[in-house]
Length: 72
Image (cartoon, rainbow, N blue to C red):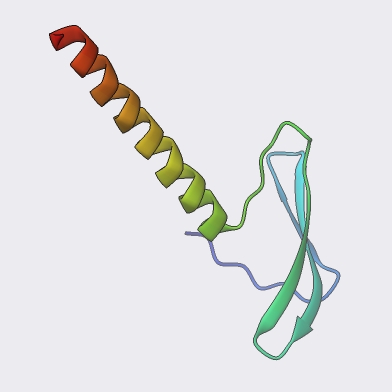
């Protein structure tokens, strides 16, 4: 993991087309702005993990249904 220090209104650029800017710092909370192309999905980690879990559950359920159909 790369750890960088940034102040308010300073930014980080990733892969020439994603910019992360520190918008505000209040106590222990930091407001971050992310500018990225529309085709690049950006999620909070907890939402990303929920999506991954739901996708895996759907794949597992489809796999079990296919196996049941195969076995008759």
